[in-house]
Length: 227
Image 1 (tube, rainbow, N blue to C red):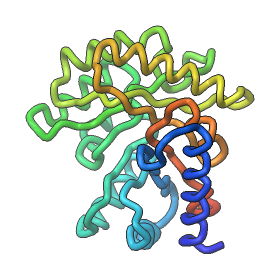
Image 2 (image 1 turned 90 degrees about the vertical axis):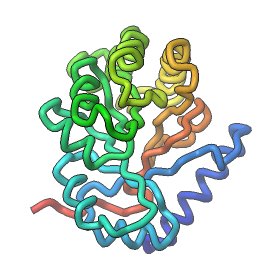
Image 3 (image 1 turned 180 degrees about the horizontal axis):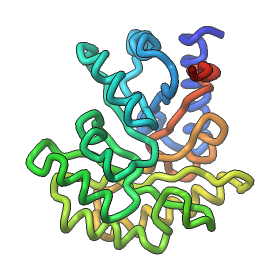
Image 4 (image 1 turned 180 degrees about the vertical axis):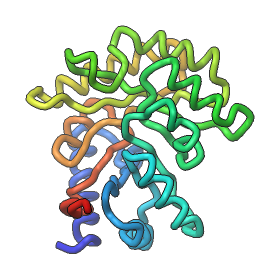
């Protein structure tokens, strides 16, 4: 299928999954992940009605947003791990950051533009037993929410984000993420968003309450080979 057909087919599957879960499909935001694809792909996506795109590498995000500065109606999501030293560049190029996982990173994003427009952020939760993976431990996410709410007024906590661990049942993993989201809402009551679900597990994420889906290859096709 071509790009437009893949997009339509994916959207139809999302609608079916939402209705099966008893949810309104209009509650969901579909983010098209365009990692390694050329800026021209984003232009075409926008022609087909896409408004939210995601990137996971700072250099690629900065370059594409700069090249497509004249493109109206695009909301840029940064979904990758953030090095603190790149916080300023990521803040400058992002409308939403999905991977805030520690106090120091939140502080750096805030310091990058403390008086600017508020930046929407998700608190990333590590659903594995490996502490080296990105994300705060589920038991630490409430403390992270308290820190951002108290010390980083230029950031707006919108909810929680996670990737389902390989080899685990996505439904169980996303259920734990929903539990972490409930803890965050005790601190920030309007942090109702949940970023979860990719091409292979978005149905389980929707059933668990996801509001933002990060869909790549099911829409864009295989990623181009890197030089």
